[in-house]
Image (cartoon, rainbow over all chains, first blue to last red):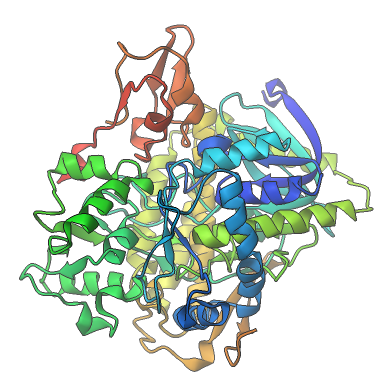
Length: 561
Length: 67
């Protein structure tokens, strides 16, 4: 049966897996170096990834005051993401690229400025000053895609890449399939960049609708799993990220509401954030989530964000711009019958994700100052790495990754030798769910994964619960051998389900190693509830000879680089 | 379930199928109309509505999300 599958082979200088904000910026960085670039994505370049429908803020320092400098920004980063962030990498992937990134945004036609030509900046989430530039990013992705196409990108769309090609020394491309036609793709590449984002659909969703996620539900940790399989090092994988969302709809909007001056209140109308953090409503996200969960747990829910005290001008701005990030948030409020100027908006904690513990660093493939992974020929950018996330880092760091990979490809002098037997093995594994006999479907297994992760590896975890989660996921992995796909779309979902099991397992192993609590409920160990100085660094996890290996990478915060 | 496509307005251009980040909408070339094939996988991102040249798409949230 597998003989009926059409097979296509491509060869390129740079292969980018994931065409979202980071991947698309990487494409520009590489294309501007005049190399051949292929971008593979499960969606289409114009509207894929976490910013498909738009985005509304870009974090930056602009040298307007003492709080607004590179040094002040890095001091803030060191404070808010201590123990997870590598300042040397941050300096390389953000600070050194920032000025060019701001110019590029103007060049591609997605200005960060308001109609009066000025920046509108807001402060929230623990910042020492208004670092967030509010902007209309509804057409950011189409604008980036247009530029990539103008520069000659070859886009493999509706394509799921499942495995890297590894010759024993270096990564030389990847294989995957078209989720509509089923065509098999072999892409040979001198340099490969992974940019598939964080992992969603991994933890129980309070609405019961798994695709109602804060970040893109298409993101299921493909890059992290692919990299892990060839022995690349991952870091910060223990962190489970949650946010505060409007009750019922996991949508971005917290920054906008809190940045504009929104106040969290409980059922009794009490403002409670000051009890939990000295910055009150402008506290870091991990503390906002912790406080909301705690208030609900103590019986003080429901919880609301109150904006009724805001000026008419601020309210009008909010109403006009809330849909910049998630186009449909204003529709949701209207259909729910909420008028922000007249009544508080009920909120709650969202589903969890495998993602970075703050706005300034990530969780995934460990990268260095040049976005190189620990494996030759393999680079990574965006939310799937340990040092990037959010718009500012995916834009700056993504572009850097493209430049570096293009330079690597230009200097590449080895023959790309693909092992045909290995290709055949990977191909059979990819299409196997189409031929298996059985009735086990991916939705059932996914639901079990979410429940296991939330109950045993979620906001509260300990050694016993994490080991139990690992055992259960191991059993699920065996059950998943019988997963059946009825068509190529379902084949994609089956592979995503397998990725979720792998990411969940890796998270549990990393969580066991961090015997402390850090970033509030993003890594809360009930058996080790204190934050410890000895854990100021990253838990690094990788696979060697089929075994899980863990290391600790101490990070220094003594001085700004 | 979202998205809701007004077939009186739809010109059959297939843009919603092309643009959906999640492969939720498929264009049926025999019937010359888009089909919301995997409604339960909709992210409610609004991309289809943003790109529809005929303004034929409305987003209605499912009851699970409104209560």
